[in-house]
Image (cartoon, rainbow, N blue to C red; front, side, top):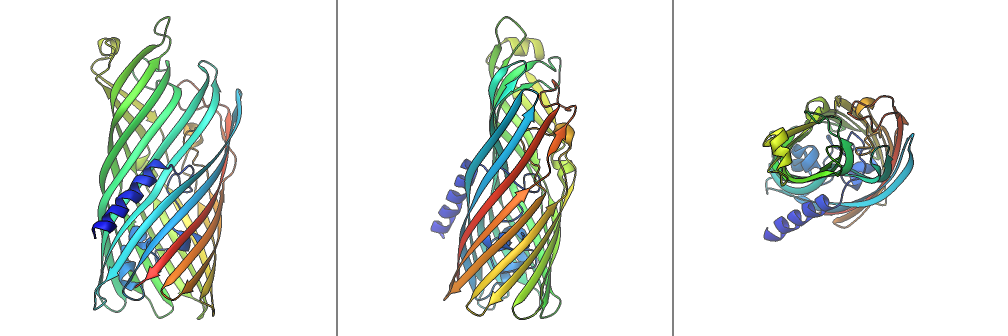
Length: 425
């Protein structure tokens, strides 16, 4: 057990150190692991992989045999484009995200426990862009969410199972960029800004699975909002208050949430070799990503508390909208213990053009996936490829003070390659 906990902590640490550069539903991943990814991210009504701990813990008690363990690696390659009157830039990034899970069932099969470490959300981008006031600078963003989730499931009867997870979420944020102050008496002042902050919070989710008949299974899951109070520091240099930039270091407190979500799914066997599935997900972005609030204290430069007081509050408008995700999957099982998978994902638009920036390039809307799995004895390896893309997005007048991203265009696409190894007990 000590080794398992150590591996889980290591996996989350790696997930936080390696940014997920582009995600599909805003900044939340469509799927975790090669099995789910190959069939379009559908997982709520399935019970064949360790990621059910995160998607629907009720599935753990329906796992074949007495349990499983899974280790996977997801590699994402993003291709981002941004242009405005001063810039025409492209950024290509490659990042690796690991995940680890273990599920064990009781001897009578009525109970199951699980532990998993996952990186379900994140964003990031690094650019060299020219600002009309501040010249050429680095624009860098990074946000990562890792979760360690102990889980419990119970089989109520032959058809119904329920489950829940309660664990810890750890998140890290970084923003390094020139920008214009958004609020307060210095609103509109150009500033060089470097923020780093880390936070932790409880994370939880619940789910159920119901076997409608021998061919069809229904699943439902709810993931609670993870609201973070980040602690960190900011290095800032405000320009225009004197002949030289006025610099200071601050203690920073950041308030931000990762959204709650709810979903339902169905998996149906067309015959003994073919299975189709669909998940419908809702994400509460309007509550989680309305604005980013930063409180600055303990300035190292006495000018700031003398002019603005001991605490400075800065708010960045986000104004995201709730979104829906439709996921479709197909699987063909072959007599040689292999399976071919394919899928499609559609995500409705949640990021308004007025607050779109290259720092959070969450513009992916469509994804096509393929996958393959091969079993031998108690082992199964799985492979998946996902191509995600979205339409070109344009910004007329930006809602951010200073107009830094006005009259801009953004485009993004991502390639996901997922590998996992499952051992069944």
